[in-house]
Length: 210
Image: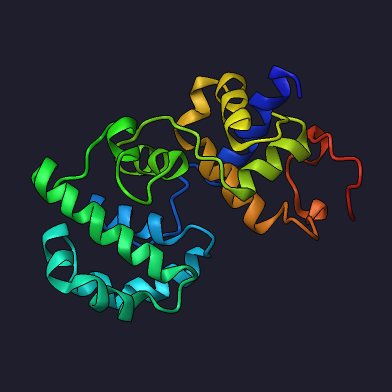
């Protein structure tokens, strides 16, 4: 996809949704971190159902440590891989208390040192809470980047690097949310809704529907 087409791609998505937001529910940086860790290989809707009651009671790493791993599991047992995720959340909560005074650090390196936090999770935290123009490549972003021809790659890291280079700075603040939401509701994996797509003419996908 040529630079002018990429610019127009995001201009159209921005016109539809000027201020896209994460669909994960959270109340502060810590609860956002917990929600993103829980969202790995799970849907945002499923995470929100599990955290609705949890976040009424737990809003800090100190409170999470008091709840304990067994207590946390009772809240998140409907989420896939909840045992490992609960263990990681308790471990990262302890690090936040011991090393950061209970605050969530605002650098990628510090975030990625936390148990259960990879590059994608760190990018989400940096973008959503700290306002940095990062590109979190989940399955939707990976699919769209390859399907549209915007940034083809075989790994999330390759796609992230290419997207960061290709997307104009004007759009980077919200770019990953526009891509995620477009992939979630329009450019779906198995049945893309090309008939509803506002960027259809810019897309290199050969098997368009509708």
